[in-house]
Image (cartoon, rainbow, N blue to C red):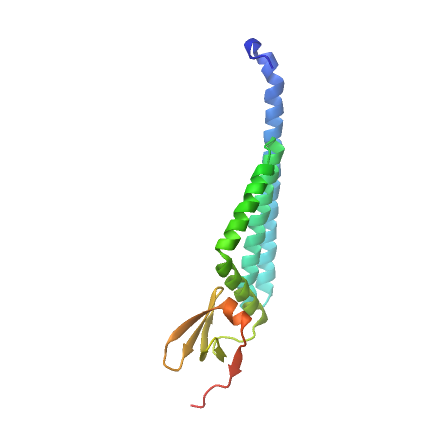
Length: 175
């Protein structure tokens, strides 16, 4: 394109092309945004109809699905605009790999917590022995399980450790 002879007539086709691309990208992102809200609403309905113990996990999965759809829609909209997204995708992959290694223990305990909450091998109030600790389970969180021992101490055991060790359910002591 010769920049010395620019006039409105020569810029008009470029402006129209850019406007069409921007409109298409916006339309694609809005479609993905609507789809993400539909998925989130469906997941909330499924969670409301399901067991109360599993609502938090189902809602967490719905939030993850919603943000994944929005991220995919954003990258797709950028591609529609003509942005070269291969570098962005490679960068996101490397960032994800680095975060995965950096947050390995947190992610493994969180996934183990989800599995414990879904499978319910024990519940709050059960007496258990795990990782050298014997006591009553006071709470099961996403990252750890709280166990109160006979001396009244509260131990926070990472769920990954619980998932990888033998858990013994012991009978409750007689009052």
